[in-house]
Length: 101
Image (cartoon, rainbow, N blue to C red; front, side, top):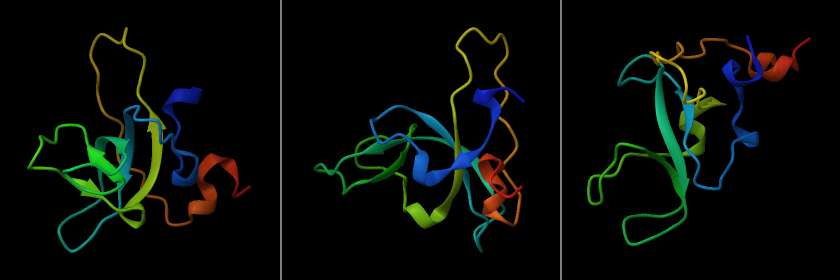
């Protein structure tokens, strides 16, 4: 898998407002999933948090750090048919970034 198609530790995710893909941890609401998010500084619609990119003012989906397992950069824009990668299902987060070797 190339550098862009690899899941990474959340602590290394960019907090500059750029959009990234994240794996949401499974919970009682459902299995793990992938979402497109960006880091938002506090504003009139909420505090600092990861927000879903399809959120609209007043209807914001925010994720706290513990809800997110890992991230990866968005695929290149020249991809003909974008398909989202599957959610990362590893148990040991030390496996991310190859650090569990």
